Length: 261
Ligand code: APR
Image (cartoon, rainbow, N blue to C red; front, side, top):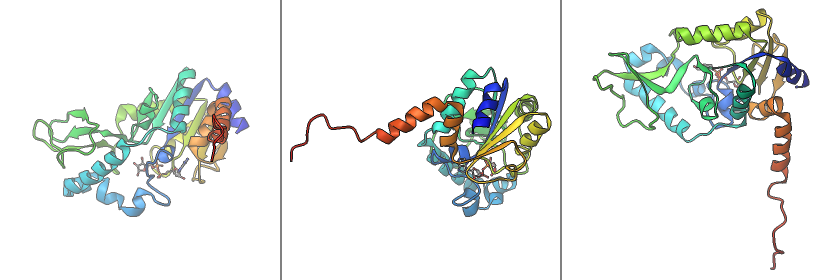
């Protein structure tokens, strides 16, 4: 942790790549690992253009369920720490594979959503896009005002990433001094390749995860633990210490008056 803190202090340009793990402590299910969404469902039945063409209602039922789960959730201390890091770092890019919108809710501004957003809907007929934060949607599958079928504004397996967003993500990985890789299994490409790109361009790479990934042994420092705890410790150690102390002593205050039995 101390080396990573020092690199963060020295870095003039910081990029961050996040995955589902950064939202896990908010209650968002991850995709892989115990309890992951892809343990219960097959990705090819729900997250491919072919699945949507075959059964848009089934695919939308799944996305509508996820939207309903997400609607009740809040950012966690990891999201807030990254938003704070952005405020004090002149050259900062947050690249996320997450479609949940929790980084933005925590106050992050410069967010590159390489896998889109679950809150965007796109018409297959007229191509228009609209933000819709309703959970659950009144009509499944939803329809555009033009009558066309709307799809979730996410990137499915087998689809290209949004070109401009991806170019900006590559540029950030190529030019940063430090890349933080947080809560991703680092198995889904091209996003996982950003860590290699940053490393080969001369950046230090620090990973935070509750388990080792294929990247862990190739990078400069691997920090084992939940990002909701480690990110505040890395980014604002003083505040993290104060909060930990407050949490320890909270609830043990003396009652105002002696309690009579
Ligand atoms: N803190 C840090 N890491 C965590 C935490 C936590 N509290 N909880 C879980 N993790 C880690 C897991 O160990 C795992 O390595 O988060 C990672 C989550 O991995 P995935 O579920 O594979 O999520 P992600 O890497 O974002 O998946 C990439 O796959 O299905 C697609 O499009 C989907 O964007 C997603 C992509």
